[in-house]
Image 1 (cartoon, rainbow, N blue to C red):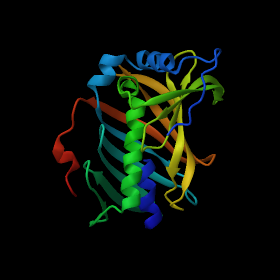
Image 2: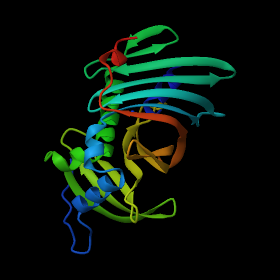
Image 3: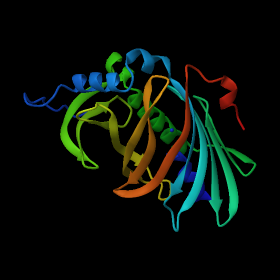
Length: 248
């Protein structure tokens, strides 16, 4: 059961680098990405979302799951994950209200431990980076170029986003379209409870209320696929009701 609880986290300090003349300006890369995803007005308006997903967690023979997730940036998170374990349906709900977090596992409610709470805060921070607008507007964010790479055979250009007290988040955008293809950073492996290099890949974008959002997401830990997910539905919102994040 402990391993199953840990999987929920994936289903929500910069060392100065000199900018070489031939490297693109990281602010210009982010500005292009903001336009590609719908523009500053749209991204600023929708800071909350409700989504439904399905997919597979690559543990053992694999675990099929469906999930519902609510995120209210910058600091609120709720997920309900339904797992199929050897034909038995297990539902686990996890909530963080900006201050405290709880988990409801088969009717047993307990507070999240400090390590899990810290990880949720990092996930929310990475989501804030992915929203892009704050990255340019808030001077506490520091940007550095990462050059060009291939992301699943697509030409991409990268930016390292740093914020004091948080892990660095590397973001890679399609060089042509400006859409986000991949994020990379340190993350907590839900099985070993150790930090790993975590990559998230995004694909199959479509328009939702003027914003480009992906339908396909993959999570890789230390180069090995860990989660495959298909986003079935996403609703963009200006704000979620506070009751969404009440203790189970």
